[in-house]
Length: 183
Image (cartoon, rainbow, N blue to C red; front, top):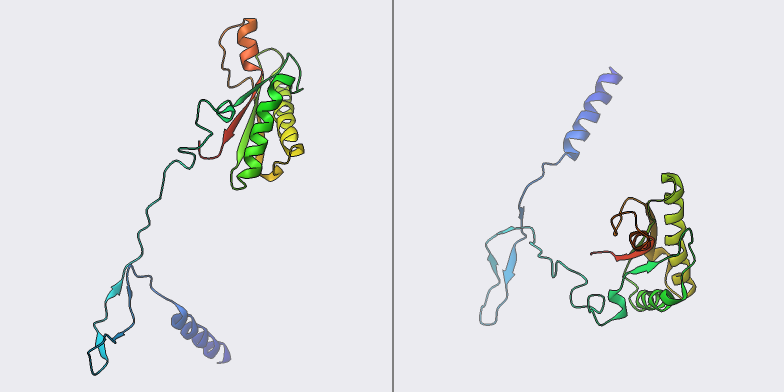
């Protein structure tokens, strides 16, 4: 008998707690208190519709110095010597400019994509690409950029820029690309 009573009590409790979702919600009654009315008057109960939000912009980086071809920030690749993850002297101002941008724009986030040429095994190239991306990230954090704002990944030899087996093509592929979130 106790099981039946407790079962009915639980069923009643669950039925009382259940709700049915609706697409519109009834609004509360509102009094009209405009000047000139002698008695408060209840305005008709109208349904409240969910707010429609429109994005303010589809491109968060539109119009910024990141897109200005005259700005150093529009340059996004750091190139490396063969089998090296040392950031060359000529690319240090570029890395410093992006680090400075991140310190001034704390909400900005970036991904550094490490790449290699096709020479070497797949596993070796993935590891080398990661070391290259990490080297650029480390340099930026030393210069004051927020580490969690920067993600480093390796594509190894999977995203070649230069085609062919020439030294010029290999040099194009030995790089770390800087990509900002939203691009």
